[in-house]
Image 1 (cartoon, rainbow, N blue to C red):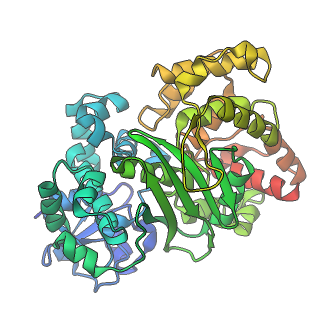
Image 2 (spheres, one colour):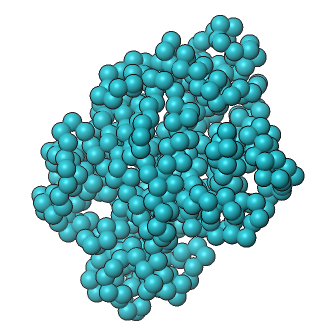
Image 3 (tube, rainbow, N blue to C red):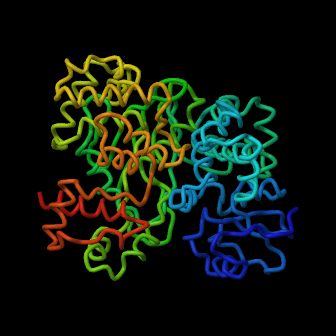
Amino acid sequence: MSTLPVAIPGMDTESCYAAVKSRDRRFDGVFYIAVRTTGIYCRPSCPARTPALQNVSFHRSAAAAQSAGYRACKRCLPDATPGSPDWDVAATVAGRAMRLIADGVVDREGVDGLARRVGYTSRHLSRVLTAELGAGPLALARAQRAQTARVLVETTDLSFADVAFASGFASVRQFNETIREVYAATPSELRGRRGGVRTPGAIELRLAVRTPFAGAELLRFLALRAVEGVEVAGEGWYARTLDLPHGPGTVRVELRDVVAEGETALVPARFVLHDLRDTAAAVARVRRLLDGDCDPIAVADHFAGDPLIGPLVRLRPGLRVPGHVAGAELAVRAVLGQQVSVAGARTVAGRLVTEHGRPIETDIPGLTHLFPDAATVAALDPERLPMPRARGRALTGLAAAVADGSVPLDRGPERAAVRAGLLALPGIGPWTADYVALRVLGDPDVFLPTDVGVRNALAALGAPDADPSTWAPWRSYALLHLWTSLEEKS
């Protein structure tokens, strides 16, 4: 087993140990503590007795701890923590790669496919990931598969063969061996250890998010923009269709406020998938929708004392930046929303879905279609679209660039490169490119100075000339607070 702690950016050994002694939940997912005398690794907030400093090591990822020979703690389930918020803030190669690994790219395309997406050779990517996270891409993907498998074993009635298939394992034997190695238990022991309601034909999970969590505001944002046929919302819930690598699916999430600080909340989510191999991808995309890896306490601390945004943060603690499950869909909807109201963009998008979306059968009333894919939109005649011709040409041109891969809208490429690629397209200006960065790329530091809603919100707050540079690196959250303050007054 490893005897050397892995360096944690911005933290020394004593700082890490202090976080463990205080059981500080803010560091769950940022680093992991492993205990040599027990062979177990935990999250920093584990309620177990704090081990002596000379007996521990610190690791940047669960995969690093597992690769060093440690098993996951059965009490705190360290592999089930939200991901590190540092991955979105810095958007390093390691962070971008982790997002793609969570989406199942290694299982579908191998390490070479992952490397192509982030623009590196597989050898260099392995060196970068090992240096930053303590494990290479295969070990990180293995840890992801083990986590998905554990959740499915404990929360569904799927057979173990189906769980192995859904989690991305090549065989049931590999699945059994990995579960025993990582959790020191057989799949049967995991299933018998934890109860819960299991629903045949569906996968019911609980997605971990840091608190406070403004679930009601997130629901209101999504419901206001819901496109008929693709999205529906009701009292305390939101649902939509999913266009996944191996087939369609649906998800229904329950969204409510959780105001307790520094804890981990669990968002109930029900997935129905055409192909179980899409389980990891579906979960990763819904976590992006929820801004599931945000550290709301860090955001709030940054705005404390700011005379404009500070009061808004205290009024709505835990406000999230809504992400999206499909980059191509959001980009199309961003163009549809140029210089029109939210209701107008929603109406046009609904017509596009009705006329060109792919019909599917679901068990949720109102969910009838997948949003048209990029190739379908690219093939449309811009002269016949219900919008100005210039915008129609911009729409089909953008869709063509996404369809042929010249503008990839996942979290693999560098954000600056994606933005430059968008701005190079006719009819795509800074507002559209930055809105895509906000909701697709998960950039926490986007501001839309020309947005009418932002201008009106600043004017309503008596600060039309406010300088947003002071809000970096969390300008995306300042933007959401401004939008929310204006919408609530409307």
